[in-house]
Image 1 (cartoon, rainbow, N blue to C red):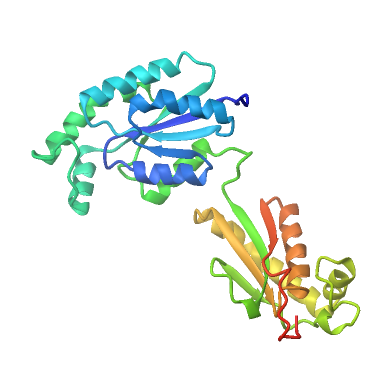
Image 2 (cartoon, helix red, strand yellow):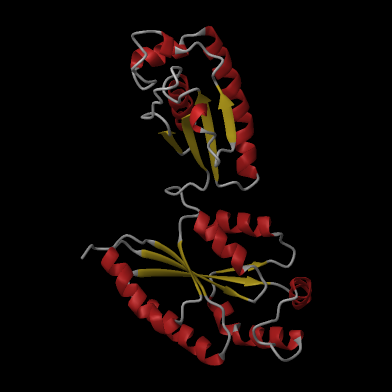
Length: 297
């Protein structure tokens, strides 16, 4: 059995309609293993599986109280967790005013879980009464009455993101246009205007990962001018993407075959962004592909 690290458990609870769906999506982006409404009776077995794996260290558990019996089970479960050194528990309680909750339910035309056959406001008041002890236990209470989904997401990021798991991540990839555009790219740059190493006999069967090819590409005057302007654009755009709440960005740089020019520039751009402090993965989609019928790279 692998000895596990301390498990960081965040329990997401609160009033129905207060933003638990947005919250759990935010925790997924923060790298948490998220579970939505697991019955409390299954939790002991789940903890055992987590201990045995030793791989899961961050869990966000959504709890939606729908009955007094369910509520009592959860309180008992939390009391048990308080007595273990394996789990560090933090409760996030999402709240909103009765008026705002009524408005949200009217807008979505959904039924409140505790008012299936009665008045909506009665269900909200009953739930608020049931959740009283849970609210008192919460380490963090966020009132979403006047928050947009984006603002709630930012609030969660501010309170739960850690330095070992940056929220914003960049993928810089090379590709060959003759194999098709990458459908998941956010920014696509075409570098087929640069001199092609394929036509240099010594470089034909090499790639942009080989230093002579990389030097050939990067020492071209057109390459340097493009690189400086492209990096200036990225240095302007990337903080804007972060401010808009984007968690990942894919930058695709393409040449004809994805072997030489795009590879060399992807390496250069990716390493420059890493030095600037961004978490970056560098990949080469078409590096090992070659089409015999096409003699350009």
